Image (cartoon, rainbow, N blue to C red; front, side, top):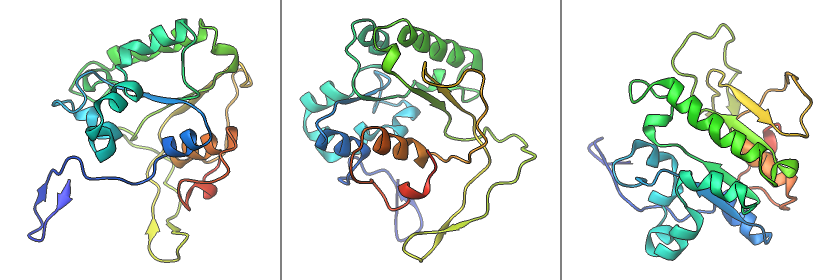
Length: 212
């Protein structure tokens, strides 16, 4: 959405052409995909979480979009055939995103579990790491207050972390049944990709401040 002078909002699509983590991955000679709902851009709210809908270069090149934004239903097939990219993001359709009242939470859990098992049973499992997390805390009470606001690296303005969200690290390289007390943020996912693949740069000044 874009804020207008009269404080109203309007949707401008596409409107962005800024670097993403995928640009850094490509520059390193690595591969990536974003598995999304087939209805992305066509009335599915979860399309809001996908760069496919908002980036000019993606909208302008259908072949590019088809190559890098396959349907989420293709994830299990790519895993079974050992065709997964180095970096993959998975975004489920709204009815499977565990956002009430769009669909039962158990339906989203079942879809997620099915795809995780597909990866665990694939040839790629021995070299894989799954980070399962959510975009918000669901609006429920949390007895742990959010961290204190942090000043932006530029010294101007600040950003304030919200309440905790769950995060699961699933991999044959993760210590079984372990609980990590480290404070992470969503930027930790980007920091992890940058470090694991030695990308040599960061997407944003805030990335180095995120634990990974």
